[in-house]
Image (cartoon, one colour):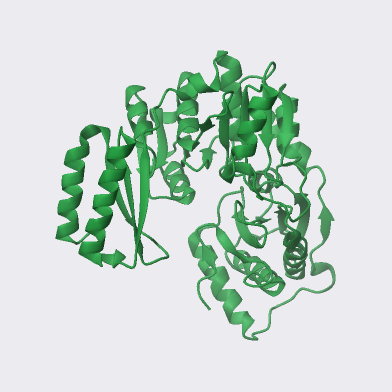
Amino acid sequence: MGRLFGTDGVRGVANADLTAELALGLSVAAAHVLAEAGTFAGHRPTAVVGRDPRASGEFLEAAVVAGLASAGVDVLRVGVLPTPAVAHLTGALGADLGVMLSASHNAMPDNGIKFFARGGHKLADELEDRIESVYAEHRTGAPWERPTGVGVGRVRDYDEGLDQYVAHLVGVLPNRLDGLKIVLDEAHGAASRVSPEAFARAGAEVVTIGAVPDGLNINDGCGSTHLDLLKAAVVEHGADLGIAHDGDADRCLAVDHTGAEVDGDQILAVLAVSMRERSALRRDTVVGTVMSNLGFKLAMEREGIHLVQTAVGDRYVLEQMKAEGYALGGEQSGHVIILDHATTGDGTLTGLMLAARVAETGRTLQDLASVMERLPQVLVNVPDVDRTRVRTSAELATAVTEAEHELGTTGRVLLRPSGTEPLVRVMVEASDIEQARSVAGRLADAVKSALG
């Protein structure tokens, strides 16, 4: 059996890779591992379980709930809610464990299981490893120690979760959204009820698209990975801006009043400036990744804001933020973490904060986003090469040095070996798109020559 836990929980094709048996077994294993770790000591344990609207979430939720209850854990079933809502409720309700069933922005056939520790934080890597080990041990037939009688877990629906989460979102806003017309694309996902309710309570006039989930249409041509519908709707309705989420609403991308995309780097730039003005940007620092657009870095330098960059992945951004006590971080893809108010990326919170800045300043999102110039970025994947020699090839090092000399201070080169495939990713940024393409092409040829 290969490793089950990836960077964002356990994920795969539902009922093929991710079966009911696996979901049940992992849930029982999680309960036993947390009990061993002392998480449940001195009290009866409780878990919060939520899901996105995928059809497969219905049977996977049943399996997870059954596994937890059979291991003696009481379950609060919150139904269809965003991933950050489950994380928030895990902390707010004092639960010992949170479980979210979602494959985020993936297509409908996929699903996933993500565990949260007490407080709504990501489960430590060593606990994930232990859960996987215990699951593997018992999968081969070793019997579980099972409670009986009053020791079995009880299950109840917790219908108050939506209102509680929305109240939290609206309560942390620095100002209301009165006077704004906002189009929301919910990706037929987990925020289809939450996000419109939150924006409306905050005072905005709301137009929704992609907010009729049927279990099959999640992320289907809509949401943060398909912005064309939102762009058209913003222009059609004469809206001030548009907000797009993915299936589990831990992402947020935006569209300005002209229908132009505002990506995660631009959103971070706008929020960083806003939070610094409110003295909420601790140590005047924002956390991004090595894939953050060079324009973002240059903009933060101009604004006197320090940028800390991590490896690609919101988990690395979050780890850096928690380790150093930073308040804001995120990725170009729209994973934005506002750590004072959320323990994970929260697309609805991000959208609300962005809209609040528009309302507060009276400026358009287009104007606010112009704080940074998004430099042209070209990405080329070079397959069938020895990715392990990217950092040791003298020939490649020479080619990179030449490219960097050509680009000067207005461009950037990044070579990244893929973590899962035999290929190398070549990323080039430059002030001119043709120059970026030319340099990227030459570097791709150099990668083939040096590593092929």
